[in-house]
Amino acid sequence: MNVRRRHISTVALTAVAALGLGTLTACSSDSAAAGDTGKFDVVASFYPMAFLAERIGGEHVHVTSLTQPGQEPHDLEISARQTAQLEEADAALYLKGLQPSVDEAIGQSPIATKIDAAELTALEEHGTEAGHGEEHGDGHEDEHGHEDEQAHEDEHGHDHDHEGGDPHIWLDPVKYAEVAEGVGKAFQKADPDHAADYRKNTATLVKDLEALDEKFRTGLANRTTDVFVTSHAAFGYLAERYGLTEEAISGLDPDTEPSGARVKELQKIAKDDGVTTVFYETLVSDKTAKTLAGDTGLKTDVLDPVEGITDHSRGEDYFQVMEANLTALRTALGAR
Image 1 (cartoon, rainbow, N blue to C red):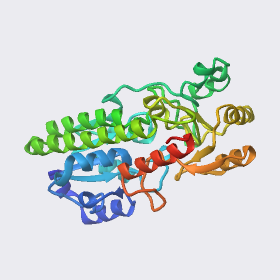
Image 2 (image 1 turned 45 degrees about the horizontal axis):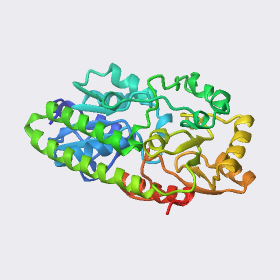
Image 3 (image 1 turned 180 degrees about the horizontal axis):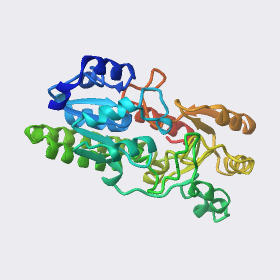
Image 4 (image 1 turned 30 degrees about the vertical axis):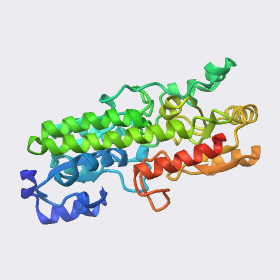
């Protein structure tokens, strides 16, 4: 669809393809710089955005993910060639506040259609835990919540303070459905020739997400504890949606190291609230989680933030991995 792509040289295309821009399924099986694909070319920032683009766009889109499968999205650094690739796309779909490098590149890009998922639903503030201090009234929030409100600068000099709120909206099926509806409308406006199909595909995806929401509601209805411990605070929205309390070892940024006081606090919380499991992720180190579990005699298991699909994922797409997460939570929370 993008006629400008016809002017890119074969050498340039090969060079960009060599960068290994991630692709997904049949719609995006070609390299990220496959020339004029004859389709609506969408560059997505990372897997949850690419998944939306593919499900909504169907056969009419060519989707490229800027984040490689297995790459931790927070750590992504956009290359010069990826920036050039953005300029040749019809649309960019991203989540502002999660990947500073992507935010900057898309902000400076002349691309006509820029879809920020963070503007399609209401973002909320989440810290190391979601409501635990409020529930217990014991000062937990004051002791460790402040760390996540401070700016955290990574090794590349990027600010990870998430001023716009917690960006992990895709882990709440209800919020993800709201984003899907907004993306569908944006596709319809940008590519009106296929608006009817985009509308139909969006409705189907939203229905599937509503079904997933119902599975979580019924699956977690009868449980022995509300508290679960994770390696980083990615599950605040999910916790609030289903009346749970997430206690995270790190904050919203998975690279943040917990303090000794925080580790001791988690040990006490685990004992007081009947926690059985410390959850870790597939894309970040499990060392701290396993150390905490070992020190407290707890089990470990995977709770996947679905930031990317790899051979180690418990499923081949968003829905399969989320259902695996539900199974893991049910076991950890004693649901029956």
